[in-house]
Image 1 (tube, rainbow, N blue to C red):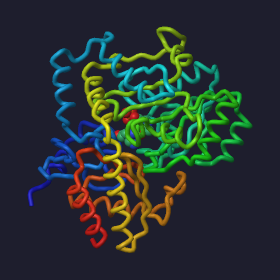
Image 2 (cartoon, helix red, strand yellow):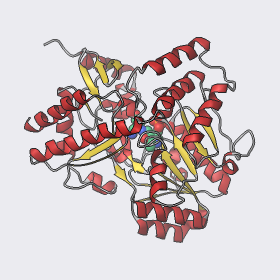
Image 3 (cartoon, protein in one colour):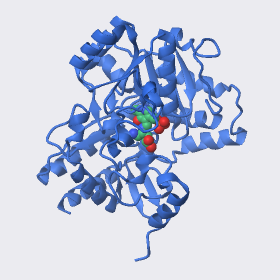
Image 4 (cartoon, protein in one colour):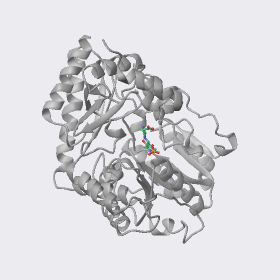
Length: 431
Ligand code: KE4
């Protein structure tokens, strides 16, 4: 058996790149084994350096909602590339993308484009502090908002996976004003606002915590959070980098608006889907807050590649496709079929599994019931998850290589792909 090219590439990569990867979760350290070096992708599939095909349920951690290489997206990108890669000057396409986002996000009146979710969340945080003149911020255990210092505290995603909830290199004074609360805990909200309300600039939350795999903020919890933010003049910031344009066309905020009359966040953070696979993210909110940003206001924020013409072409083409009638109904049906099938396969094998899904995003835990917070996620069977991950990988099914990550379905996944996936799940449990 010739040595896998993946293994050789990983050994070589580790000589020149820390851990052999440019983002920690890709190193498979949470699940063990050798990461797959991907050579190409098309539709719902990836091919690794050994030429093995996988059905892809990561989709670049969310952006590839149409599947890889959608013709309309490629055409838009190729045309944009021919016109120029980057100008560092305003373009009409940035206006088009901003207007499109605002059409789909009624809680916002203006939007600023940036290049990553981290940059968007960091900027939204600075804006909230600048606009309120306050310093304290609240986040929730298990939620991840990118790797800006002030937010890298008890983060989910890679950090939770590595079991180091607080990153080295973050000076204590930088996180002195970052309060970390248990997710879905109304009593902790009440106490925190009683103690610190007038000093809280914002509360940042993943409305469906995809960095704890898939944990929903309960409607009563969210309603109380909105009430407390309003009462104390703190901005409610929805981090929809993962859920935006993924769980619904209007993101998670549209789901809470349907459940809670008049509900809306104050600021929203987006990424992933709005770039369609290219480096593009955004933060948005009411004009009164957004116009505190430079060059109009005192809150500085900038970026060489912000609103990049190729990235905006990719994002616009993606949003054009997902706005088409029936897109999300079809996507949600596919995701529901997958999730229910996985639960059914586990039940048939007598294996405790709980799962949930919304739109094109899903999650599952080896546990009798869904966890509602970070300790609950930590208590699920990680070893069984890791064994299942590798059994599925061996069957050509590419799931997220960490218990704390969500899964993503694309419009390119077919019934045959689902059947192959569920067949692998049934076989995996007999393995
Ligand atoms: P980026 O800086 O990675 O573009 O976005 C940071 C971010 C912010 N907010 C949420 C809710 C996010 O999920 C993310 C990034 N998500 C991870 C996956 N859990 C990206 C994958 C990775 O870190 O390699």
